[in-house]
Length: 163
Image 1 (cartoon, one colour):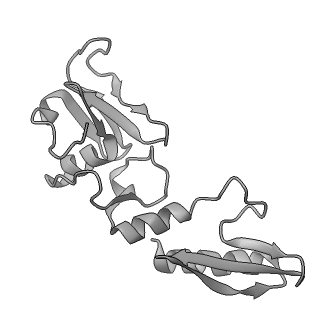
Image 2 (cartoon, rainbow, N blue to C red):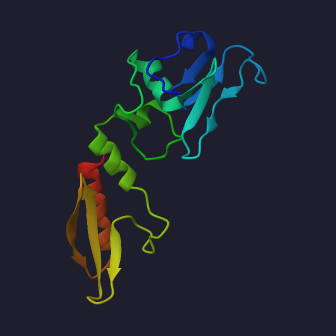
């Protein structure tokens, strides 16, 4: 079910702790008791909370708790550290779709063998290559003799464009 509107009774049923990013039930409901932590991770690792039969993403509820501004799905809300279960207030930010997509690109792929997103070993050149994905394009950041130099170039670009 699409959640274009916040739950009307949100402040009556949940408490949000901005330092931990966790939600707690203010009343007993079904199998949960008052004071229990609310939410379970979905298949992508986002915390979801069911309120009166509707499932809400916890980061959207946190944003609403702190700003009184409801951002429905598809409107830019992002986890700065790209950890979808980390709903601490300082980790949430408004973001354009491009920023959000780029932030997702920040995660290291399971196929990555260098251990650093955007850093690859170029066997034919005998160098480390760094790049970053911005919008719809990959941007070359240079070739380096040392792995640490390629990682530093990538991290500098991340700070400039992702955070």
